[in-house]
Length: 602
Image (cartoon, rainbow, N blue to C red; front, side, top):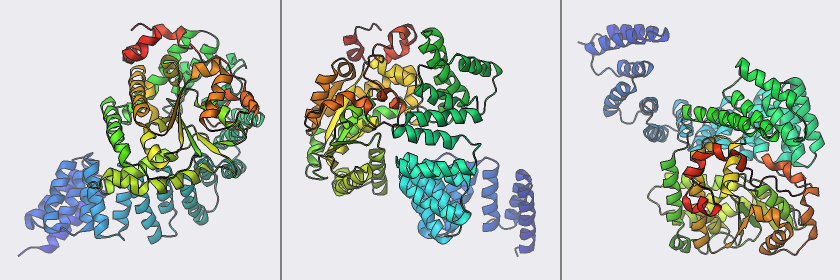
């Protein structure tokens, strides 16, 4: 006869040992319990968790799989198995098990929170949002559920919806500095600057010593063309934090003519002291010094600092497994060409909307998209929307639909969804009434040109191309997020540029919608001729005012935001030449048919 009391005593002792961090000793107690009853579920569940505590997920999986054979409908058991697969870095398997657990019990806090967490790790943002939404409905007064939910929506680029959900956190907790600042960031990401502005102001009122809201408010003023207010707020941030590198960088963009020698000396001393607040603090300090020495025409010193900046980024991306994977990227671009081939696009004819309003300005980043948009948007019948994240969101939703039903034909999905996506896109543009065209200058939209044609077959695409070496060096010399991890290494930059050039050549041959290529160098050299060509392509009457685009108030929310507040110039042309001896890895990586016509020797 099984001694149940002895088993319970051993399990109780094991739990006490586990709570004290004595995992191996606790595991021994579980083994003793299973010697008395080899099938005791409670002892085996605890044993599986202890293996996970001991960082032995493979052993944990064996235990939970054994239990699953006896209890296939137990949602908590499936959740434990999902956690163990997550610990083993088998995220797809963990994700599948977590979904099964929620299907068995859609009211389990453990299962819903687990699915949300694993879905985030698996970059299935909308699945995560759905899980956290259910959790919030189960616990409408728990602010943590709403935080998780809004974070998932933010990841999915549903920024305005994230803000709406986050309002529940404020309803429960009351307004705090953190909440005001988070709301400001949601609306900044959504490019709803009117809504972001009062939250920045509220955050400053709640904590005037935190500099983030000052810089957020500075960027809002710059967006609306008030550069003086932007400068004033940036200087206020520097009064609070005299060594804050991001404020220096913004001020340098606002006042490039201002001498920064004292700042450079301060930051050089900071590098010598080697004391940093975060992993990117040192990198961005080198970036500022790189820009400073470039302005001083000390190009060798400039490149040393630019390389230190990018080496720091690359190391961080490698550590966080966010590095640029050439093989994966090649597969993604090849898949896009395959799906949106001439035959594939033929299958998508007749779906979407017939609107001619959108004008998509696509390119590699730092190619002149801001200048191009400013010229067009100065026209009285055009609204410049800036860098809209909406096509990226559409692409995420397409992937979500594919993962939701892997056997479904992708063309069937696009045909069914294209009109709804197009309507969502037009709503997100937020254009004032009466305009004929709205520009979207998000550079990576070049990836989605096939999808754009399915949604807006009568829209227009303009691809602006810059000298490849100037283009890539400019990316190497500016701040970009992990989404642009390829920009941290010169060889990767060249590799990605090859993929961009190849994909644009594909679109040029396959798209049936209106498509125009324009050279950045030609635009700055022959401003009026190219401006006339642009307006004609957009179906607009000539207006001479577009030649004085820098006098308008339609500023752009990017690195280039200050540059376009001045007359056109050629400062960005042939910028690579003083660095030729340093950029060998970039030149070597670029395809011969790209560098050959430029007269650049490998």
